[in-house]
Amino acid sequence: MVSECTEEVGGQWSNIHLKDYKTSFQKQVHSFPNPNRCSSAVGKVGGGQSLSLGTGCVHVGVVIHELMHAVGFWHEQSRYDRDSFVTIRWENIMYGLGFNFDKVRCV
Image (tube, rainbow, N blue to C red):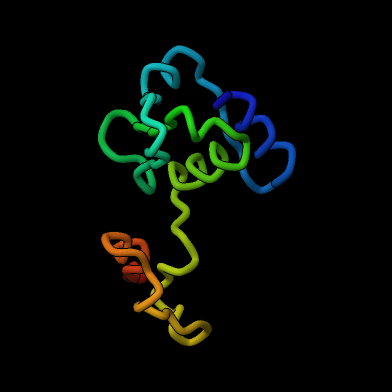
């Protein structure tokens, strides 16, 4: 599923080039069968990249979303300048999920 999605990303966005390193890539990407976990670190962290792709996450859009995190993309609601464009209604955010709205510093 991951390789199918990397092909789809490459086909849709010409400015993103993903290379398939077969063996080394397969050793670095891990899939965890937890239906409640779909996640990835943002950017390469350490020697390998863990993509958490539980059984409920194996859909093209979700896999591409996590691959985008793996190559360095953050959520738009985490942009350092987001308050110039949107208002976060903190009272509407589910308990324990506020971290998804933390701003990322501009580096």
